[in-house]
Structures are given as C-alpha cells and as structure tokens.
Length: 280
Image (cartoon, rainbow, N blue to C red; front, side, top):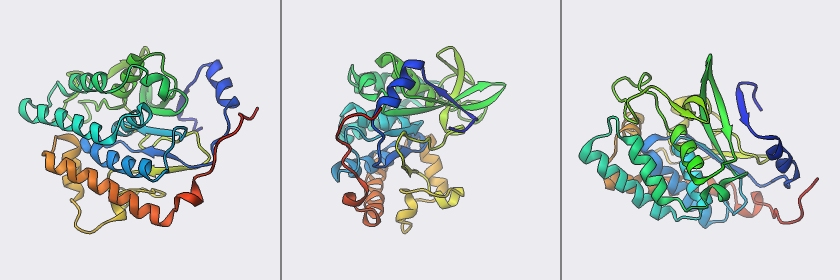
C-alpha cells in the first residue's frame, strides 16, 4: 500500500483479511465520476450479466465509483439505481444543486440501500476518501459498523470541496466534512481509482482516459471513441444534472464500452473459480 494512503483497518480486520482466500480473479475499481454515475451503472450491468462480477468479486471506488460499488454489493439492480439517479437529477434540475445536493444524496442512499448494506459491503468494497491533515492523504475504508456508517463514507467520498470549485459549492455550504472524527473531502482527489483486494484490478473510468493522461485503464469512453460527447460536455454533466435521455445514453455507453473490453478479455479466461476453504 502506498505510504501516502491511510489504511483504515482495525487489528481484527487485518486478521480477517489474512484468513480470507486470496482472490485471483480481477477486482474492479470505479473512478470518481460525479453525476456521470449512469456510465458506471451501465458498465456494472454488463459485468454482472456476463459473470465478470460475482458475489465475492472485490470492488473499490471513489465518489460516484464508490456508490456503484455499494449498489453492486447491496444486490440492487442497476436499472433501479438508474431510476433513483433520475429522481435525484430531476430534483436538482428543478431546485438547483447549490448547498443541497449533499442532503439529497444522503436521502437517496438511505432510501435505496438495504438495511444490511454495510454487512454486504464489509471486506469487499473499498471506499476512497481524502483525509485533510497537514496535507491531503488518501484514506481507504472497507469495514462499516452500520448502514449509517456506510452512507457517511459514501457521502464523504463524494464531497467535492467548495474551495476547489468556488462556483459550485453544491454538496453543502462548507469546504469539508467530518468522517470518523477526521476532516475529509472527495476521495477522487487522492485516490481517483483505488486498488481492490484482488491480485489484479480492472480500472473503470467514466472520462476518456487518454485525454486525462491515464494509463492502464480497462474500461472507459476510449473503448468506443466515435460519436462521443466531448470531454467538456462530460465534465459539465459530472457537475450538473443532465436530462434523462442523456442519463439513459450514458448507461448505454457504459454497457457498450464494457462489451468492447470483454472482447479482448473473455470471461472464461480471466474469471477463476474462487470456491474453496480460506487459506491461513
């Protein structure tokens, strides 16, 4: 683990991880994406349908990427999550995002995630957060005491500071938020695509990876570069809610990009049978 990353694990969590069987199939890491969440949902839909993501597949994410990981682990459908995204987007279009998107996000997560979402996510989902102490450092969390604790982690991972986007202080009227007695902000600032616990991680980026200078990205809009939105449009949609037909299109494009990646990565070659006893 990078020395710039704070690993939020208790002693008992470390022991439990050592006892778990090492996952040799790839895990999936989803990038920060803001309101481009439907793209990630479309990718996840394909990966679930085709058997790339199973009940034990390690997941990691930052901001919207962390939310889609929790949705996957919760067992909810990606289509249902897309509908909830539209509900949030419509509210924002009608009433604006300034100072209120954070409260809306909490409400949607509390209504959408099941009561045992934290149990389903424990040890499987890594949520990236940026901790502010002297200088920003990445914080990884994969153990949650309650559903509220999980929702707080997802909210914090998505907390874009107003000082960074002075024209869009839209999560809340403050520059940072508290998580487990730490002053924190959006995880994407330090861990844009956090590592999973698997031996190999496939990274999913909602933005054109090549335009961001990112390498080693498995699934992104670069998979299907023709007839795509411009990077400027994508960044605008990441910060302000797009129309429903655009959200539907983002979902479709995520699905199609994952399909292109799968052509070069057949499921029967990269997904291993992880059944069997834990290794000590």
